[in-house]
Length: 358
Image 1: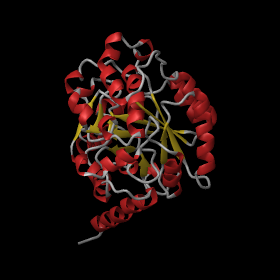
Image 2: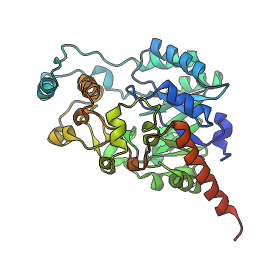
Image 3: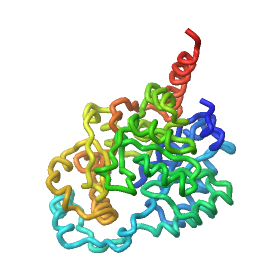
Image 4: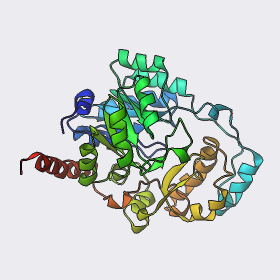
């Protein structure tokens, strides 16, 4: 349990709670994980700079003692800022708006500017900042290092892991195609970047010199043990923590994660315009033929947001983005502290047994 990763982060345990965007993260969850010895995380890509400043203050107040925590941002793709919805994009979704009895959007607001977000985050000085969808500029990395902030990048392929190290980040998360939520491929198309976690991790370990964190399809002590045995110095777990009592997921989302439907997931662009792994529900089946035609992120994400929120408020799982990894059915509706304890105790016993002489 004592690795370069734990020493770099200042954690007791080599376990990172995956950051969830779009309101699925919570201060309570991040504080619980950090307080129990892991690294709690909060996905902030949807927040404006003022909200990011307030978030870091809330996390500093909630996380016990001097325990570290992580705030995550998405590195934007170059084309995103210029994208706008077309009339056909609204027409495609009009039946869903009518079905849920909510008005069709009349305006479009692009997401907050990344440069402003990262400036606010650096100024707020969280202990750790992580990035997905790409690597930040050399200036951002240098400023983080100057302020004593640990930086984490995310890779879906070996080449991306090499790029993360070359960009100067301190840690790389090797995120396999088993993982729930959005795929973070940034060097090649997602379809060419779907490498399973336990194929990806040993290749990344061989290719880079910085600590490697395994992510995707890890949900219990067996996955933790396997990842460490393959050379990872830690694990990042998303779906398992999303199912815990402190997460910001809606009741219908949590129920789906611990139900039989969680055994089948699929990559879909329907909810955000970017491929993401989710439990199949009626919306995915009904609009499967539109996968190639929905607009790119962030346009589709903005158009779907009112529908997702309305459905979640009504406990209607038919139209909610039920993000989940391929090991979702191993999730349990318990507290984050209880879940973390189950991950660690049995994994430590298995690793100790492996090292004992016969």
